[in-house]
Image (tube, rainbow, N blue to C red; front, side, top):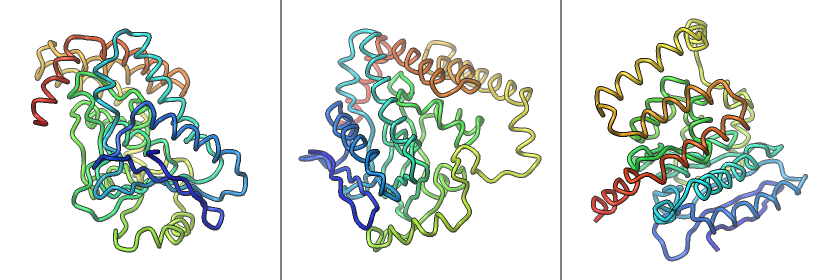
Length: 298
């Protein structure tokens, strides 16, 4: 078992704690286990909130299992794996009570995407915190809803930058971007989670995570302008072509995808994402990038 679920005073807690590992990763078995817990959770109408956290030091969730990604052999298999993750995270997003990701360490790739599916995200004042979606470095793109949710949470321009660069951010930067809603002390965190929930409810944060980020009227007007959005996509493409000369397919595919799914509903947007993921993960570029990743890890 990689997860533990318990209830205290009508509040649920899911803790990731992968056995025999220093980190938590989203293997197929872990996702299946998480899905089963969510089925149990959604039928408990007495629950007032759900916290998702990690028992690992300095780790929330380090991402999906790269070995499983490497073994994907064809597009249909890739699409199925992407859709499975998306549907599980949709189930989390659709729960009828507040869901809070508590990040006290690294939250990368699928770990970041899981946090994005929660209604709220809080991080601690831990200098080990890194939050982001580095999939582009493996020649792919976020396939569990990240390309749909991230630009809506932090804004189109910042969302594109995070996904195209693959560079994670620390806790203060995440707060500034709106990627997390609050920073809290790590000391005594578990004992104070209920107090944290009360603070979130009292802070007048919108329950709609896609319209919570603080913006001036001018910023809001500019960000919602179709002309400005078109310019953002154009600049992103120019920057990618300048740095890759068009030889690296993932960044261009990411721009094309977000240009489509940014104006789509969730169902259509995630379907587009699964298709794009399947096209990239089966390429030689992806396999070579994974090989380079293994070498750099060693």
